[in-house]
Image (cartoon, rainbow, N blue to C red; front, side, top):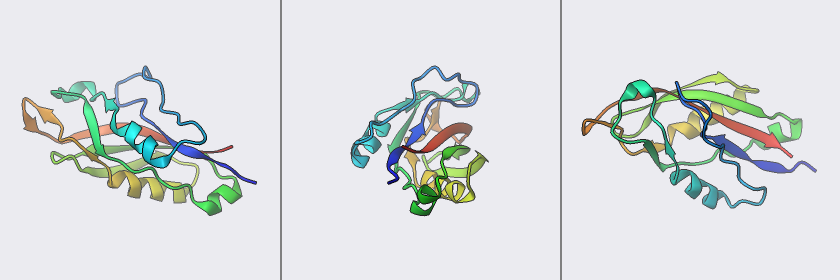
Length: 141
């Protein structure tokens, strides 16, 4: 029997930042809503050249479902992606940098596109922030 270990968003690095923050790793039995709530409580450092007033904070997040056909086929791995946050906090320009399967790439593009951040501010004015890099791990146990 294949057990799905919750797909794990790793909010551990952005352009110019080292992996100095521990990855978010939910226990096997974690409640999906509780995990999403945990993600909403984290902040992300802005890229050094962004000069933002505050760290980036998610206001809406969803965790992608691991496709059953890929689970059965044993497909797992890390999807690395980058994106931009618009002045209104919406996500645009999700680009996949690395993925073990096209279906996981499509899933991440769609899911990350639904996320919302507090509008990034520079000197109190909402701005667009790009080249934010993240990873999402799809892992079977």
